[in-house]
Length: 347
Ligand SMILES: Nc1ncnc2c1ncn2[C@@H]1O[C@H](COP(=O)(O)OP(=O)(O)O)[C@@H](O)[C@H]1O
Ligand code: SF4
Ligand SMILES: [Mg+2]
Image (cartoon, rainbow, N blue to C red; front, side, top):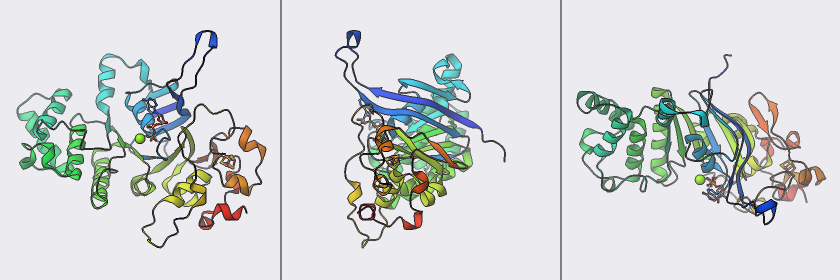
């Protein structure tokens, strides 16, 4: 197998917000550690799902990738170059190559600009002169995103949510990016429209050979289109693997918890999930131990060892592509037993 080409590489990326380091270290107040020592790569042409509950650091990671946020420590490499070393033409190229698509198409479009205006600004940013070249680019772009000429002179409010997200995508594509970072791009849409937009991402990936980071709190979305899935919890990468490894053979108890919480579409499925107590918002820099230990159901099954509370488990390889950050990942019950209620099992 040839080695995949790496587009982005994150090395030990940590991001802290707020906090205050007083004179001589006095009056120091802790900030929020939104990302903690994240190592991750995005490969050419892949869809990498980035999942986790609200507050787990997904958006922060996306913003670091597109360069709208800087890591507090650690390094971001884009196509082999340190992102902070990009200057001049290389920086301009980077800004075109990496585009972010946000959750809410209702707020990400200027209400006073027609679709034509919006797309022309993008073409101008790419350096395409008005006239024949731009008309040709427009004619090529519209069918790719399922828009028509007749829509060009209308304003965002005249469109449905799904169509607006198509416009947002079209705008991102005007500059011919190679990477899309999509932050919950279907969360604000009706369920009936979500699959259409997700399919659009898939066809764009295929036709334009895009690499896509698909940020979502919804594992069904990640399952639908990801090649690999990375799971974040309180700013730490706790598990990563192929779609199948994560969806069917996950080893981290947090991933299992997310999977068990994903709506099944079965109205009779039990809703009582005692292990879902607590929340994912980081309280501040961790004082050591496993980031998940205060909510972990596996810890009880393995008889509550001290290690969980005192030693941070590193991300460790389980099999090819599959890694998890849990001292006891090998003891997670097989996925077939996932319907067991961990709270009961430990009783
Ligand atoms: N600009 C900011 N200032 C302060 N705290 C922030 C900022 N952005 C994010 N955070 C905090 O960082 C954590 C991760 O946030 P975020 O990346 O938005 O998570 P997610 O997208 O997974 O919901 C949260 O606790 C959030 O409150
Ligand atoms: S290291 Fe311990 S607390 Fe952390 S996930 Fe594994 S079993 Fe749970
Ligand atoms: Mg977010």
